[in-house]
Length: 116
Image (cartoon, rainbow, N blue to C red; front, side, top):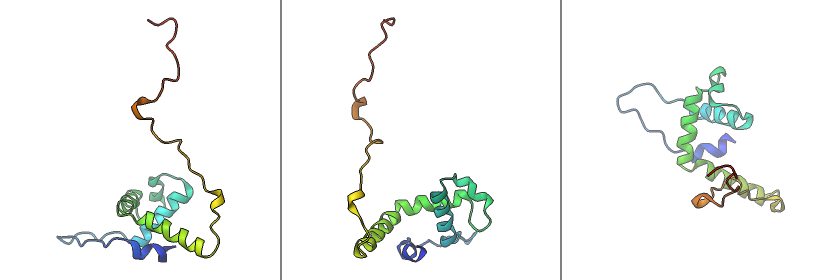
């Protein structure tokens, strides 16, 4: 998976005045994947020796999300599955349970009889 992601990452800028080097992209990727697979909190990474801190991995995830890395990875994986004939679109579903009701939506209950 790393070989698919690495070419899509934005270049890391140099520190203008030297300073501490950035954490390794691959180690951050491994931390991000760990959190996403296990559903744990970012700070759980602080107990794992081979990955950067949870804050560092969270920031890298945020930056890569803003740069569109995950959307491009998703597209590549879908294209590969489709080319291999392994993409079954009959099981796709859209879920709108998290769509905000504009202007508050309709009232779900009437006021109590005892209230004025």
